[in-house]
Image (tube, rainbow, N blue to C red; front, side, top):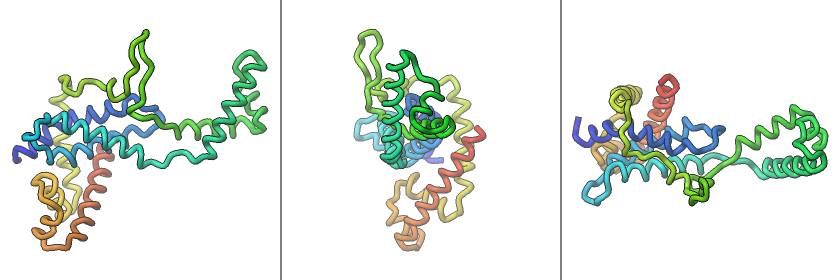
Length: 238
């Protein structure tokens, strides 16, 4: 294994922890597994491109790419339509009105009656509205005891802190990434190795494999899709 490949694999447990940290403050109804997988694959794409001569540390360089991959995945998701937001505003308005009228929080039955729907429909609407909420990693969180509010990205754990289980995770992730690569057809594996580990541009990869650039682009896209599926499948049983 080359030094560059060893560097990527050695830091994979850290990348996995950091991707998890990037999503830890997001609402629980979001699919954290998908977001973390996006962060890890952002790392796998960026890590081989690291250039030590530019002054940045390897982890510092990769942490920016991981955060960016998580944000890109959030933006890619299709968020709630206007009708859901309108319904949520109506529920909020009626809730406030009933609270003032009753001098207490309304029950689910009272709220459903005021809205002209049954309780099951109300619960379904509330769930739909809740699962479509979104927050930004750059939003400020509430300050503690008069302190200054910080963005979520500034409240993440220190990625440089030693992880007690790093040695175990290193062995597990090294095995896992090899298993993922073994799921690829030979031509897709060649594209991944040449492009990401040897940093050869896709056009040059096409020349080496004696195929057209469009064919290499297709193989590259298919390989990333297979790797993501394989990684997510392994993560389910981790």
